[in-house]
Length: 185
Image (cartoon, rainbow, N blue to C red):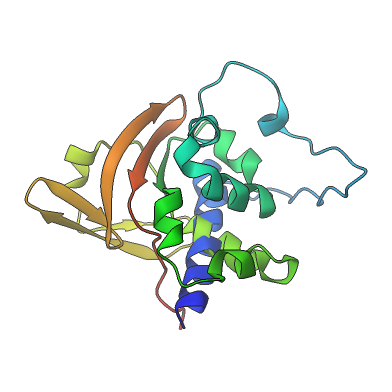
């Protein structure tokens, strides 16, 4: 049950990345095979400090980066935005039931992984303080996530924002849990 919710969350986050980056429909890039190089804006060596580059540069987000790369959504995270990415730490992923991450990274589960990842992305560029004005946010997977304020702390989808890092195309809110989207009806 928790594995299914996690897969749904990661898939949702990927959708949010894609939808939040561009309001027009985009043709999906074909998956690169082992002998084909990956192409697109994410693979250009430049000095941009996008939400993707913030995550790649963080030793605390290697699991998230691996999930983004497995789901092949890097290009969506370097678009103009603005994007808010709720980025679970490696420790947050370790709280999931054993084997969950490994299961999601399998080829047959990448769609579910993408949905969970999209659930971690919101169009906009709001500080933690400003998020206190919201009760819910519309995520890239077309689902809402609940925002709660407890004292000075802000929780999104049950995960606490523990840090925030500005990026050239938005903001990365570091969170202490993996948000799982509600089951779609």
